Image (cartoon, rainbow, N blue to C red; front, side):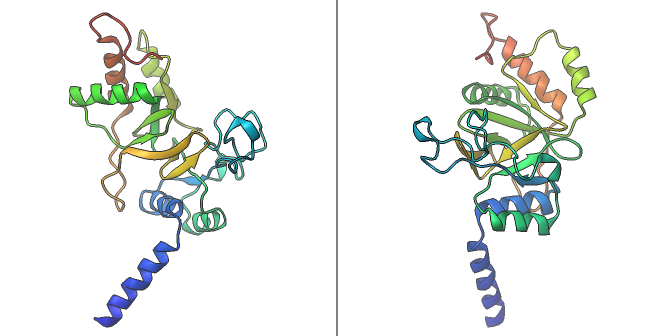
Amino acid sequence: MREILGRRRRLRLRRKGRSAQLDAALTCATAWQWPVLPGAGPATAGARGDRGRGCACPDPECAVPGAHPFDPGLLAATTDERMVRWWWTNRPAAPVVLATGGSAPCALSLPAVVGAGALTALDAMGLRIGPVVATPTRWSLLVAPYTLERLGELLHAKDWVPSSLRFHGEGGYLVLPPSEIGAGQVCWERAPQSRSVAPWLPDVEAVLDALVEASTGAPDGGSRLAY
């Protein structure tokens, strides 16, 4: 019994020595089989002068500071445990970037304030929602993988979709918690229920239909999801 307790204590100590980003990346890659890679991350505070916290990449005008792949590029995303450990051992604070599409989750994202209202509307409809990622600027609803062809068919069938809606599918990416980007902290607004089992994900059609309905269902005919 003493030997078992000692082993548990050593395991706890090892986990304490790992970054939260490494733990999250390992969960995604090994338990959920989601391909990940380290993101660029924010520049060191003050490194961008008076412009605030920018991106660690060389582009001084980076549109999404810290919240994108840089070195390695997106095609390097993997579920290989050894590679994931090597990346985050060398860069323990690097954001966790999910390569979306293929067999990995996709996502629909909205501006943060709009996303909060949309989530309330979807809850009122009784729609089952999967994990939701929140940044200070945007909220992203994870959905089951879809192809660009299927997305095109769904959008073609709509008379209108909110201009604030973005799609993260094949060839795209999404920063996952617990990461820090130029805009601030990335966290779970709706967290996965289990670390050992891949989260359940809704079909993109159901979420898209509900978002469009929530957008056009206001009594005055206005859009709840517009900027």
